[in-house]
Structures are given as structure tokens and as C-alpha cells.
Length: 394
Image (cartoon, rainbow, N blue to C red; front, side, top):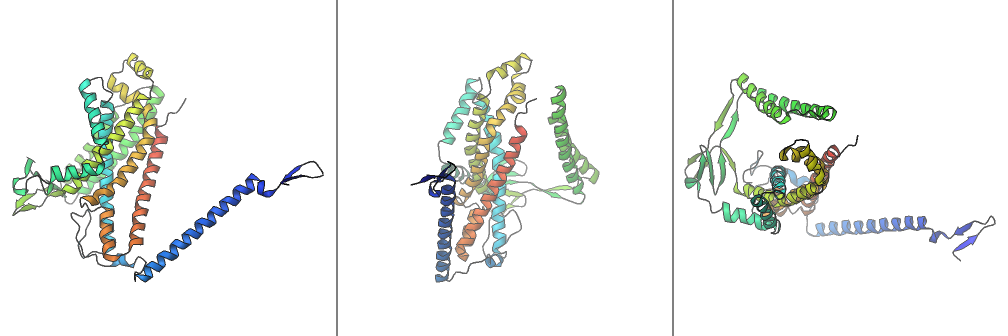
């Protein structure tokens, strides 16, 4: 018997047939199984490390690295420690991801709108871009831009000279490097004030438009503030800015700012490849908006460009942002393919540290922690942006 009736007529179900009890029991059993598996993994790993005389821990981060890194974004030399080497790789990953997201977003939005253009040539260009770059693996494009385009470029002495001080060769892109003198902080303060003022004006303009329908030229005002205030700061400080222009000395360039070909290839490949997915998200978001919205804006006297910017895109963003978040996450993680062409990102520098120290668990743990943190931070920012962009009914 699995059920009985008591004196009051209530049916009593056996505890093993109670769905709530059974659910709790299965969850406890699953937790116990996972705990046993985790314990076995820890014990097995510990024994393997002892058998190979590998000491676990993080003391190796303070030992001298003994290897060089091409074009480190922060101070680094072969005399630096392993911790500094990992920091260089992490910084390169951040720089590559930020610039990749920026250019991929611009390219993706442009091509997404172009695919919906009434102009036959423009729409076909957008379609060809998406279909060609999206349907070929990213690793191929990395090798293509690096090996087929950048590596065959001429050497420094025959470098392509686009303008004074800007050269492109198989050593990368060389350009003048700004050197700031005393008083440059005034210009920096002007830039920060301009950015803060732009944010405040943008919020005020949005509230004003919602209340009265009147628009304010935020873009022109923002450009005036962000460019004008630092310029005034430079004037007030007596222009404390000089340029370190690259020059040919021997068989290479001296001075200036160098952008290595590995970074250029990764940036271009990530941007054009990821831009295809952003373009499709933008196209889907625009097509999700009723065509009546566009017709209504035309009836109010808005031109196609303004109708797209003020009516269609704001409504389409609620459809665009979720896949856009996934695309940004993929771009950040795909930056780890830099190891294929030798760009010193986190995975490449970590791999070198792992080969020299044998601290596989610690290095893999660093990789996991960094990419997990970057993904969670990106998701957090995009969720906040999505909440700001959602339609508010009045």
C-alpha cells in the first residue's frame, strides 16, 4: 500500500511517493555525487603533481620570466617576473577586445542598414560582405590578413608612406607618438569636463524631448565640448605637446608609435568577422519594427535618415541588444586565437609561462577566471544598457 486513510478521512501518501520529498532527495543525491567527483579530481590531481615533483601554488609569479614580449603595452623586460608577463597578456587582450568591439559595431551597424537599402548596389555590397565573411572560419581570416596581406608588404626602407610620419611595412604601422609636457593635465581635465558635460546635456536633452518633443543638437554640442575644452586647455598651458616622428635608421624604424602587424591582423579579422553577425542582428531588429512606424514618421515630415535614427533604431534596439551581447562575448573569447599568429595576448603569454614553469593548474585557472570575469562584466554592462533602452509606456 502506498496510501492510507486516517480516521478523519484524509489520504496519507507514502513519503517516497511525495513529489516534494522525492525532488529534495534527488537534489541531495546529485550534490553528493558532484562532491565525490570533485574530491576524486582533487586527489588525483594532487597525486599526479607529487609524482612529477611539481609544487602547486602562486610563488612562481615572483620568479624572473626570462623571455621578451613584442611591443608590450606596459613596462616589461625579460628581467620582469611571470606575474608581470601575465599582466602584459591580459592588457593586450583588453585592448584588442575593446577596439574589436568598437570597429565591429560600427561596421556591423553600417552593413546591417546597407542590406536594407533601396539602392541595389549598396544592398548587394552589404549582402556580399555578410555572406563572404560570415561563412568562412575566423581562423582563416586571421591567417589571410596576416600572411597574405601584411607579411608580403615591403620592408622599412620601401615602406608605404601615406603622409608625413605615417608608414606601413611588414614591421607594422608606424605613426608619430605624442609626447606631453608640463601642463598637459589641463587639457586632460578639459577632456574629462567635456565628457561629463556631454553626458549631462544628453540626459537633459532626452528629458526635454520626452516632455516637449523639441530636439537639441547633442552631437554638435558634444563635439564642441570634447574637442574645444581640451584645445582651450592646450592653449592655456602653452601647447605642451610635441611629436616623436618615426625615422628610418639602419634596417628599421626608430622613434614614433609602432602597431605590430599581429595586432593589425587580429583587429581587422575580429572586426570584419564579428561585424557580420552584428549586421544580421541589426537587420533583424529593423525588420521587426512595423512598417507603419516608418510611414508615420514620413507623414510627420521626417526624412529617411532622421526617421531611421529617431524612430526605427530606438525601437529596434530592444531586439538588437540581446544578440549583440552574445556577439561581444564571442569576440572577447575569440581574441584567444591570437596565439595562432604570435600576438602576445593572455593565452599566448600564459602558454609560455606554463611551458617554463609547469604550473598548468594555476595558468588554466587564470585563463578561466579572466575570461569568465570579462564575460560577466560585458553581460552586466549590456543588461544595464538594455534596461536603459527599453521602451517605457506612458
